[in-house]
Image 1 (tube, rainbow over the protein chains, first blue to last red):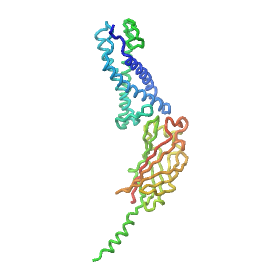
Image 2: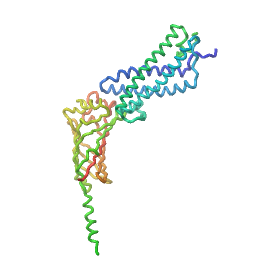
Image 3: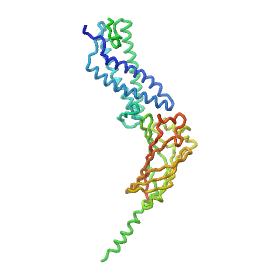
Image 4: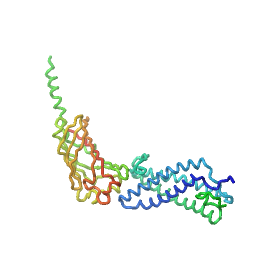
Length: 182
Length: 184
């Protein structure tokens, strides 16, 4: 048996690490925006941005890994349209994992707040302070995030459906166990 | 023909012609900016309205004086949210203390067009002695006076209560100003 049914360990680690960061950053973003100005709000904004920068860096690592390593083939018996849909959703997820931190970074610059990773490493401001552009980018950032939410639900839902309803060995593709369960 | 007396007269008159006393401030060319750190992020701001009265004669720097009155409502604290917040009791308490003032007490020449100005800064009802380095640059139309100093906001009770935590908003605020003035 040489056919790999599991993603490579770095791919799995990156997948779950980013999943955790995104699942923390998303509700944090939703919560913090409506808070009245306070030191806690400033802290949460910083944490949110640090998470975003981390995701941005990790997605670069992950994408280069993905482009140089072939993922395990999908189990047999998956319809052609589902294979195509899977490829499209994965492509869009990657696109959003790049576009969302980027839009946040640009929004932050437009609003006049430089992003300083962990309060130590400043990211350059790619655009000048511009209040109106900041508002537009805030809208873009939000829309992209809700698109991501929809795609993540679709992505996780499809994996769960294949695993539990169609009884295809699916979750172990991204799982910790190396054991074959087929 | 003897032109020497005229030449001498011109030479004698020259220093007097250059002894300008700068006392008319040009508000549009004058600025007050500040910068502070918030969660390690540099945030820039400034004041748009302030009134400066000054007199400065490069020949008699020790007689120079300056008085600045800043309208705190003209603040740009980096964002509209911060502008609003700064008016509150924990920050400037602007309804009680709408202005900040600086009144010079002593000016000392350091050479090379650099001066040291001492004076009293009053903010939120608290007064502190400050020493401010100022650089004078004569210009064709107006002279400029550039200076700056680090203000510790907690010395003036700027940002009390929850905001007193300097790990979120730093205590040090770098203030920079440029005053443009003419002798007319």
